[in-house]
Image (cartoon, rainbow, N blue to C red):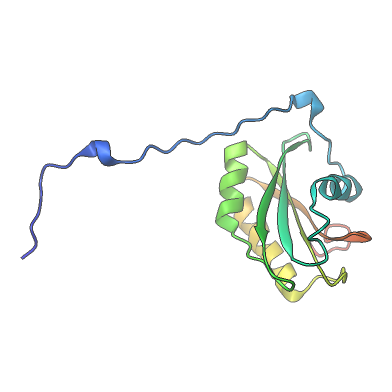
Length: 156
């Protein structure tokens, strides 16, 4: 038979804190009004020593005015794929108070064409974000030589 303890020590529970701290003034946040601006921001922050070696997934968190609240470096994977955890993306977006997300990842092969998996994960994230009143504005596939915008190509 199981031994049940009735008196519990409630001080043994971890405290959870939701915090977003920005050192950037709202007036200094970059405006991400289109895919060209998003690509410029991403390439400024991307580790170009890895862009042709390992696939990485990054998310630009945007406020209602399309200004960047921050950049989430979600994952780094292998030469052919990386993990996309929708829960981590949405938790981070909600923590920052984001109203929109701009998804991005690179193709080390240099091929800008989205794979079936790329299109499926985009739709999954778009649907999940919508439940939290967060829009997915675009998903860029990036290389050092250019990008593919799912929004501009009608894949969003």
